Length: 384
Image (tube, rainbow, N blue to C red; front, top):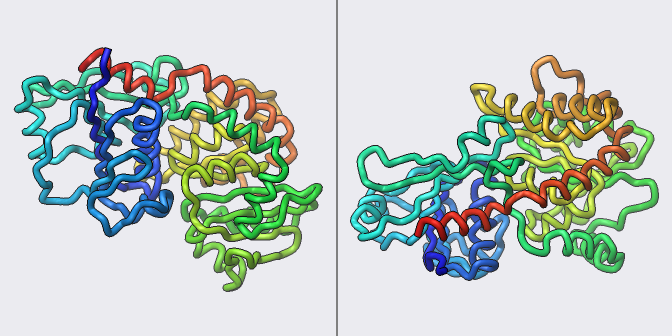
């Protein structure tokens, strides 16, 4: 049995770094774990370079981490179609490339990788055919998800072992914090990572941390929530190695991290506030308490996604922790009829021990589901 030797992944950057992050993570895993010849076509290499520092955004074609990375630009230069083509997030494919696919003696396997959602309809839509409207090219939807009826989530081999090894290695933890120019976690301190879209609720949350009873250290990648942090600090925006301290809150800025380093940060923080899709999934693998800032959509579709995930995630929680979870997530996302974020945070923080245990159980349960990359390869086996 032979897997198709060449894979092309096409991706356009829409949601800041999330689209590039998912495309890059999938490409790396296919190359590293399945020995595939993978090319990632991306329209904005600068976005990828923020989370993959080895990428040169000025170079139109390069090979990094076993993956060929090429700038997707128009007009699209002629390129021989791969045996398997992944169209990430319905970005479409170059017309000339699609025409070349149709001219092949054997049509490539074509997967439309969709956005992640916990909504129930995803179970019925996963792996459904989506024939091309004009050409004899078979396509298939591929939905990430949280049930065995979906395509699962990206999860590298050995991920949990690496996570648990770092958590058991005090010297490695000190080295990580030192590399970020942040002191080690002090007794009684709550360490939080913050990665969000512009969020009107952020100043009130910072107030709650500053005025609280427990010391909070918040780690923020540079460029995230700049306007809100600048206004809240009165222009004293933190820089790497120079935190901003107010009351019980210390704000620490760090550079943007490569994906693997960001994973390590999530593993070591007690609470992770994440956004989009890639960091949302990685927070779940971290098995820590977390809250998701859904990408705001004009039609309100993100509310449905938020509630659908909360329905699944909170199912194994007790009544009080589930109420605290829903209250904070809704307030953090500015959901209709949500309460203020400050009181919601106090309830969320009080439920932290329950949420911590739940995070461990949730991650272990998700790990029993299919790995997204592995599922795509098996589907390609059956098709190519």
